[in-house]
Image (cartoon, rainbow, N blue to C red; front, side):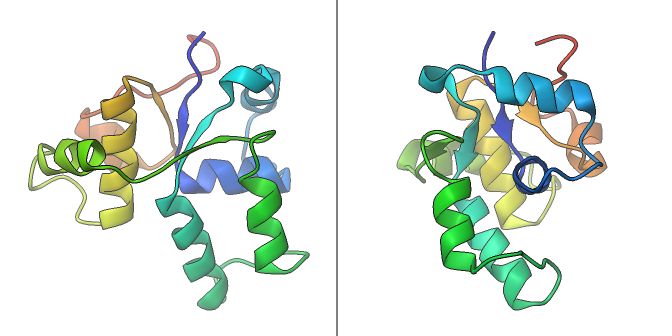
Length: 137
């Protein structure tokens, strides 16, 4: 079973225990062995910091502490931005999602050959990446 790349909102919901994450998704994400944790693009760290700064996300602890815990190897495998990811991003259709963070996250999944855990309908409808499902994966 391949771990998914996490879209930022899925990662945040998982780390915060948000009820928008289905119980089956939560169980599957938690069950990945330490050697094969779900993958997180480092752009998601920036995205969460930006959401906190804009007041669109509130955390129960400091941003610094939350990011360190939520991106630790026990939680996720942090995927650094790389030339290969940027090349994969550049190959996405120009009309696909103008949000650079979403483009990088999708490109990360494509480059790694992993499914993407997301609820972003624009990404799902574009059919440019395999979408992770706890029932199939």
